[in-house]
Image 1 (cartoon, rainbow, N blue to C red):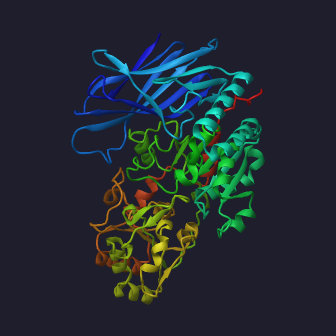
Image 2 (cartoon, one colour):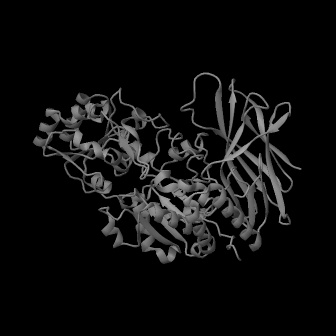
Image 3 (cartoon, rainbow, N blue to C red):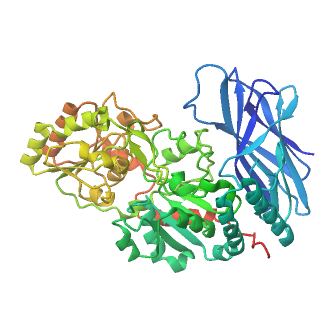
Amino acid sequence: MPIMQAEVITSHPCGPFELKVFHVRLEHGRLHVGAVFSAPTEFRRIDSSVVATTNAGTIDIRNGGFLSERGRVSSPPFVCRRFVDCFVRIPPDCKSFKLTFEVADHHKKACNCPVVYSTTAPLSEKTPDSYLSEGGWIVRPMPTNGITACRATPFRRIMAELRYDRWLLFRQRSKRAMSVIPLRWVVLLLRPIFLRLHIWLLSDRPGTAGDNGEALFRYLIVRQKKCHCRPVFVLDRNSSDWKHLRSIGPVLPFSPLLMRLAVLVSEWTVSSQPHPAVWFKPLQRNADGYRGLANDHRFAFLQHGVIKDDMSHVISRNDLDFDLFITTASRERFSIVDTPAYGYSGETVVLSGLPRHDRLENRTEKLLTFMPTWRQYLCSGKNAKTGEWILAKGFENSNFVTHLRAALSSSKLLNAAECLGYRIQFLPHPLLASGVSLLSFDPRIRILSSGTAYRDVFAESAVCITDWSSSVFDFAWLGKPVVYYQPEDDRHYIDGYFDYEKDGFGPVTHSANELVDILVLMMERGCRMEEPYRTRAASFFAFHDQNNCRRVFDAIQAASRSFDDKGMFQ
């Protein structure tokens, strides 16, 4: 009976441990369980290990890194959390097997490690009737600390679904359960047919396009026959981008109901946005009702910029279990793979470049563009329906607005721009667009709508002024100058590998007067990207061609699997 161990942090061998499973997948004769191990400890030291045991096959447990420290209390008892990945290679002649988890200290004294399941997992500790039918197997949770699996037959699949439907109907006792049971049967019967169509759902934000999702959508539509997939773009029908995207290819109106149905019958979701309430897991609102229905649905995160800060507290694998993670620069990719708190492997994180870079143009005008990023501290929470952030009261009196107003109301800047023939415009971040009316800028400042295409802004602008926005990486990719405006008392992100003083694509300023002086000087010199910034921009990006869409498509194809689960009755 093979036993493999993975070290995790604990303090006492029989403490209140928990293994929270967020990923269960069984394909090609291999079971993969991804989880987060949690244990309270008074000392931050490694003295225990998770032990996985099975009665068939071989086990490989891989140690992940610790999750983000953000939010941890500063005094005991501490709660330490760590990724644990368990792989079971199942023998071809095996008909059933069990997998159990225990915690053992360095003296080999073992105790049970209770297993619970997140809303993203196909199983649930609430009932042993929850199941996953995948890869020719039926997987179920054990009552305490493991899972069990047996070979799938049409009869077993039908009975497994009937038992789970009975639990939904009589234990949940909700109207939602009554409506979801017929849907479950429709999906179980029709999903295998739809999978053969290779439907890919693409998107940017629910209300706007113009980002990496649209760029890849355009690429796939032109090469649809060669790509052997059916791309469908998802967008709000009231969006200003609706008409021009409809002229390109099929567009699906965005709504929670349609999103649930679309995910249940499609093969891939490919989006520049990771937000779970909007895109990534639209089935979470009734997680029990949809468990196990589309476990083989894949998600590719195209990103909407370049990750330069430590974002592991936002896009960690236990929260957003991406199947593919697109990156633009080698340093960016290594920062994700080599930071344990992200939890992603080198196979998942792909260096391909951003699809939207294929469509960038350079038609420079005498135009200065201010485009700061958003700040979470300026928001009071999220809209439960859309997942968008809501601005907090007092936004107009925040340090962010005060510093921005000081720069954009400078008579020296406005007069110099007017004298030298330059125009100044302000592009608000989409999440801060609702507060634009509170900013009270000089009438000579043109305020763009949040739906303005970034591609056009980058093409026309001579200089981009930002604080920490990663969008200006596109501008630097074009070889255009950037200026950073970062007041000392206005911070937002956790610093990462990117040092603005050493790696930035332009000068860093910390006051409105300093910023204005540099902008006036740049306008007098013709707004050219000078050294060392030109060399930095050239060396940062892995690719300087227009083949990013092709590389992303190739990566998705490589990550796709041939679905060997043919349906309930086959």
